[in-house]
Length: 204
Image (cartoon, rainbow, N blue to C red):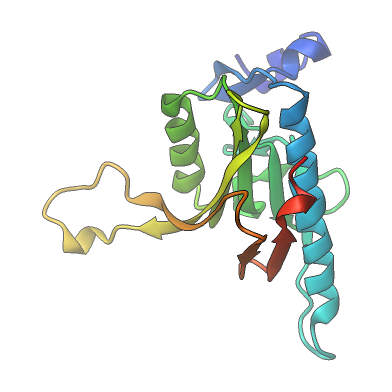
């Protein structure tokens, strides 16, 4: 299926589809809590992004970031491959511009029951191959209270082919660099701008 063919489908169907090499990938929406936590993380990230943009000294080149939820990220010019992370941070673009993988600095997913380990790893690999610097996960404890059980941050790493005798299957991959649970008072992380998110800003 091409992007143009996809646009002819009813909107409610399009909302549950991603494309990869023109193949349909079903992206089923989770329960209401899924969207709530994505929006809360988006709000926290945007507040810190705005603070960082105001903090640069006079004469410095000001950074510019935009934060969103459920925004299509295109991996090819013909839009035949795109994913829709639950939340993201991108470099500033003109109003209405498409988001490409090269624009994104954080891609994040809220994981619930429909996110199998295989699907989770597949998405991580796609984001890593595209060179997105950071990947975040919010894992929900669906068996108990539908609250957050853990938040993880990953940073992009690359294998230098010159160090190996064989070609690596995944020359780009993510390394876990942060993990926070409900017992932690806050999420503190330095990139791509300083973050200090009190746990109660996300949790019920």
